[in-house]
Length: 287
Image 1 (tube, one colour):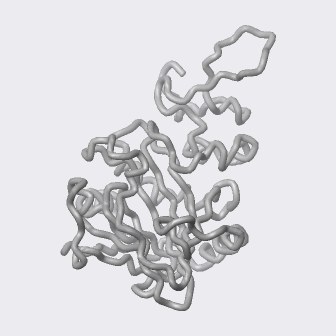
Image 2 (cartoon, one colour; image 1 turned 90 degrees about the vertical axis):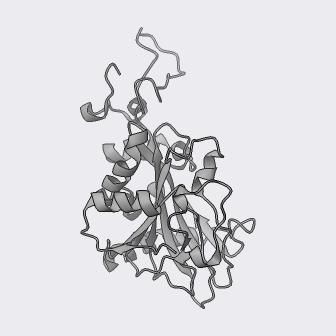
Image 3 (cartoon, one colour; image 1 turned 90 degrees about the horizontal axis):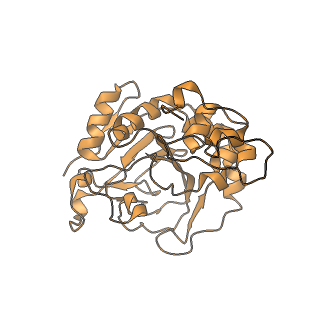
């Protein structure tokens, strides 16, 4: 059995990316401090408390999943933009795209009594249409509480990112991402994993922030979860990560449907709806 590796926060990016490609998952210890965690929890819990539990066994009948966190939580925005993680995400994904985008934001609140989720690959969001040689996403699971064997720590099958679709994990190949509050599990879209069983008397709270290739459809519709009137208040790099920028030479333009008096190009960069032009460093030649 391949063990799930736990590394100090100051490990170099190349080592993290190499382990991600080999094992499909790695834990970075103590990336954020308790004050940061408390700030995130204070902002998200009012929304979590108003979120219904899952509609089926996969989403978890005793699990609350709460999204739109860029719009709802400034503290979550800071974690989305955590440069330590973005450097790893870009190093891991950019062999397959010109840029990455934010795939989803979601707190996962596993309540006592919730059973283990079915083992799965997150890349199934796009079906089985992408070649397995293309890695479409990098996930993070931030521990907002301690993740333990008893409270539902994420289950991972290290090395399964290299398996074909038919291979199944044996029980002794499944690890759990035990980590202290403030640590983060990084895992690929191809690695087998699931939420764990919560046998404890306390809820487990994790923050799932996921990045994907810029030419793929995002799982969370960022343009509805964080519409232009909110996105326009954010820093440009975060706007671009949401997808409010061109993904390549002709990918992602828009045309204003409103009548106008002047003659101008009908192919406009998305930044226009936010009241600005593209940043020079974010532009593609000819746009």
